[in-house]
Length: 231
Image 1 (cartoon, helix red, strand yellow):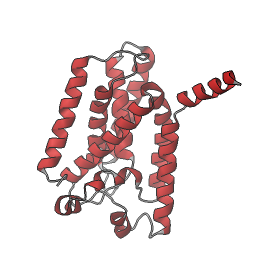
Image 2: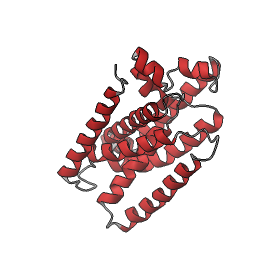
Image 3: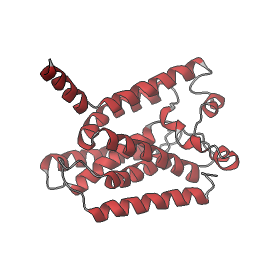
Image 4: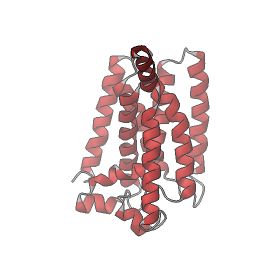
């Protein structure tokens, strides 16, 4: 019995359950928003905490840098984001481990929302794509750090193409995509991945790169404070 429990516990530890929890949370929020006014209503998006710079700066509603990570605008939006999160989360959570994965995800989401608020202050933005682009950034960090690994190199090249295509589609008129948020998430996810590093079983990241990641993330917070995003 003890061996059986150990077996199931080890399987649980290896499973990307944080990814599954994130997907479930997003679906639950989407359902609640649908029942309380809809997911495409600007008023309801604001009510649920969408990223909107005037309310962050003038009323100190800094939670609008966090809530948008779990808010989506319409069925297509959440469907595409959750499919992407499910697949890339399955890969990256196994690489970084549970706590490193969620730290990268949340920092990237907040970083993307900061970029959106700073560079597109009049827009109402929401979606997990800021955090998802942060996961792309985290994989780019893995690619940069372990480029000599043929599998990592091939996957990194694939992700680079995917990132370029997604960013390019954001420049299509009326696409509704927030490239500022995506780039902010990508950049902060890249830095956050350096900051938390990878488990020793995966490899070793230079401590100088880790320190640089921390310094640049603090610089992003400093910029946000200068724009009044944290009161």
